[in-house]
Image (cartoon, rainbow, N blue to C red; front, side, top):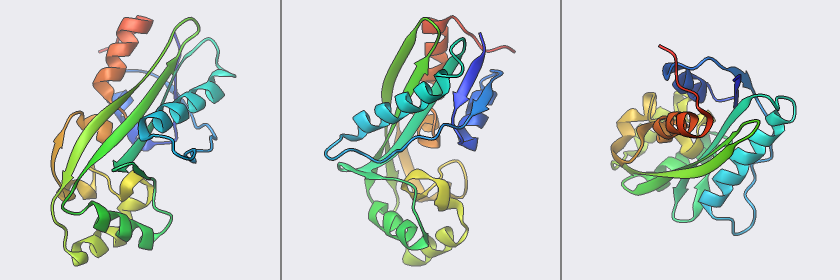
Amino acid sequence: MKIVLASSSPRRKELLAQAGFSFEIISPDVDETPFPRELPEQHAIRIARAKALVVQEKHQDALVIAADTNVVQGTRILGKPVDAEEAVSMLKHLSGKTHEVVSGVAMLGPENSCQWAIHTQVEFRDLAHEEILAYVASGDPMDKAGGYGIQSLGAHLVRSIQGSYTNVVGLPLAEVVEAMRQVFGIVPHA
């Protein structure tokens, strides 16, 4: 069965390729604005499903995989910063605290489908203002939810995590591979 990753994220592409799958990439255009009072988990699943549905319209014979990752502090969803000032504000807000990363995943095949959310707790160390400014100046935070990338220059911000590391990167890989095998009968090739 053909596999299509409904994502523009280079990190999701990398993770799925590392797991040994061959796939096509299509970037869906979906409004990711949260609904009023929408919980972060509901938002992540809704957006992942919307991405998958957009791509499935033209690839009904394929397994379409989509994900949406939210960085959450309390009930506040921290999206991708629009500018350096917002990135600094987000990182100050996360400094010295534990937040949650919630990814929604939707997998739509010709006959089966599944969707779920994964939660990971991430603890930041206390960050000096100068560290935040230097990190933001690197440009690394600008295309990442919450304004940081654990897999890149932002790794030094994180003291600890509880849960899936790949979820924090953007795709809970163990759970995706397990669902591919159990629900769709697809296993990675060597």
